[in-house]
Image (cartoon, rainbow, N blue to C red; front, side, top):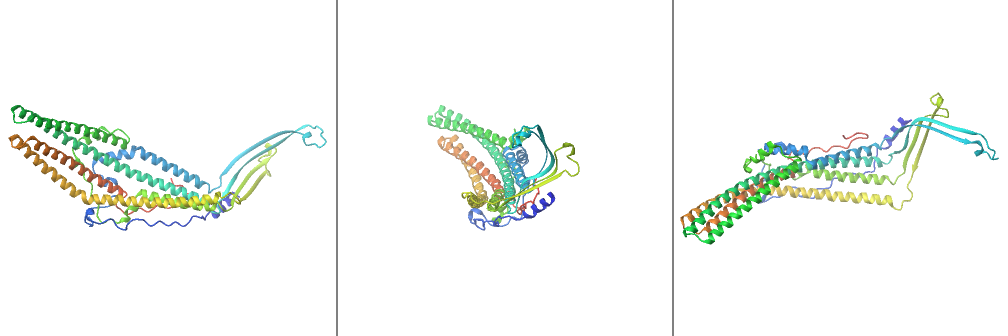
Length: 489
């Protein structure tokens, strides 16, 4: 009986009322922006698809930090537990497609008096009613004739896939954040070194200006200006020291554990951004649909599919529900004869429930499901637009940061020569100290600007790699929905 019941349930539950899913048209341009900011649109033969983060983040220290973060980062653990919860929710919804088989045993003994059932009121002796039963059965199993349970199961699967893709998006974000934090730390190392050199120069200059005032060739104003410049450098030294410590703290937060001694030593050993292994070039001419591989876009589409599945479940609520309760076993009023031949007993109780009046509740549920689908469509489109903007901005950075860095380096070199000339003329007594101070400040600012531009260029490469979904290989095929009864983990 139960084998036939299961076969009938699987046969009748094969259809759903889920609307046909159609992926919304991407509300972005078919090509990336063109123009001077984006550079020449030509293929880079030296570039290759980089689906493995280690092939892009080539610096050994950076690889070590990223590996630690992937193992210990708490945001990733939260996302992983969310995926596990979504997997369990799918198993819960999917289990409703099958009858729940329960086994049980019953022993019921009642003591009654014959007078209780006598119309004449005569009191009789006591007697006992005994009932014993052993068996198994199905309680209130719903035959998924209209696909309500199957729609809910499919929606749970799509939400599970959405959470898994969100976890992958979080993984890419953690990798990018760790690399950016390391670059920031190294940039602060370099800024600290520059500031220490400037501070030492200003101390020597301050002593020189004081001596010139003593011999009568300098003025009190020169001394005050030199002292101001000295304290300014001391202030900047404290600022960059603090920023460097905070960058290390940020790294430890992202890594999820204190930095190992060898990693901290290697990090301290990087005097500047030039010591970081450069990132590989990103090929030009990438198609705009490349962003379709981004996990956050795929996750948004998964949420949209789940909302579409919910409409099927809401539609099925309007139709009759067929529930079956059945049992099979043995029963007797004598426990010694419970398992003897002829004591078999069974029952089956099908029930059909048809909604007649619910004050508009089912219609409101369907309306709500459709509204949520429209909401997810808008969210999906916004995610695509945001991704397109992020990639376009990063491409604009790729096309301009090279020239900006070259100009900034040239500015630092020329301002350095200007400072040396101004200092020489001041020592020779040709120019006042103010000219030297202005040249020194320009040189210091140009050096810090060069560090900042270099940091922005490298961070932009990290952003572009992340914005393209962690590489530029062909987009992986989406995972199909499981068949009835299949588990996903």
